[in-house]
Image 1 (cartoon, rainbow, N blue to C red):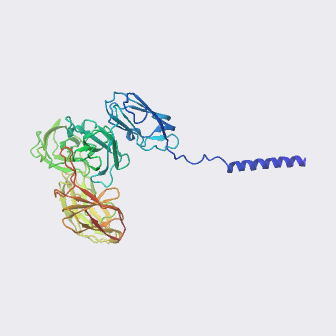
Image 2: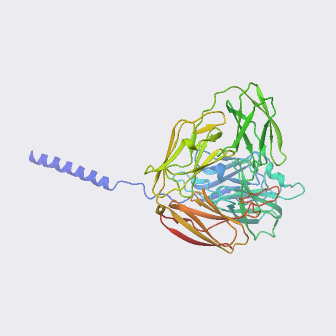
Image 3: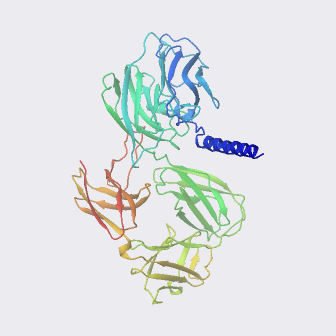
Length: 537
């Protein structure tokens, strides 16, 4: 009996030991697969000539699928309709390309897959696989290369379409608006591009941030860049081509107005406002008055009127300083009257190079400074002055401030009256100032500037505009009272001396004004003064 018990105990112990060992030595699945799928063969073979098939199959050494094919796969010259490329959504050891239309004669085609071909398990891409064939006796072999930048921003957008238009008897610059190019490629997530298998000839080179992915230029949504001259191939194949993308200013157009409250319409527009004027042509009361101000964020004018009167619709004439004139009709009905809402530009702390501004949703008509008080943390009265700008619908308060202080601005009832007779209730705005030591400064010395004046701008790391200075000679520019953080500096060559950066125009052959970035991002810290020299050669 004791022997049997010993045997059972030994057996149980052995099983536990085996299980424990099994856990320690369990299969983990091995190392992660990081090898991309390899091309095996294609039918017809890659780089075929006298191509006359309507289907291609491309084989790999493992199961593959297509990732983001709409962006990654570029066919040059473009086809309409596009061929059907499978698998989509599944996996296979080969890709099938089915053509839906007749191919052009004596033409070299290139299908660039970018990084869309990935293995089924780990998603490892086969980088930049290309399938090339010719419907003629030989393959075109010329190529060009270059890079894409942004005319204003430090970094260019990804997935830029680069296109070549053949210059022949049918070419005009307007073709970019409605015709697909002869050759195309994409930068994918790089700034560099290559166009291969090109034919000898003369070409126009452009780049597009092609939002609609239709290979045509749509100024309302696309950016464009272009090479000013004509590319002659093969003579220009050695050139390194650099294109700068820019957003064109649209031709001015006034959009249909919309009534938004009892006494207000909004007038949207495209292009530059150019002293836009709005005049009501409909019959109106003798004591009729209007106020117009620009929206702070949108391309919109706010049109206010009084008194309200009855009509089914209103007729407006819109014009600007560049001989634009149009007549617009808007529906009109009685609506709720807007109430006055006041806001300010200071959120928490107020910088020492910032003014306190008051704005409203309705036009500010007058401000009674006798009904406004400003006190500091010791409840001492702080003198101030007010400047009301009706064109921007803002009131700017100027006063002397001190560091590490807190302020209270109180507006008693009827301190502010708006255009339609509304007044405010009691409002309190509280804000503070930091220590001067909480801020940092950048001292930037410009050297070897080829032409003045220049605009020197500071942006944050994401490209948001922070501040601007104008330099008219070799001098040191100071950006002070900067919050700690990372900043970029850029110099704009203000060629026409109008105090702003001017974009380009493709049809007029105008390139945007040159912008040069300081090569390094500057890390500003509290209570630091950074001195930098920018040599522009």
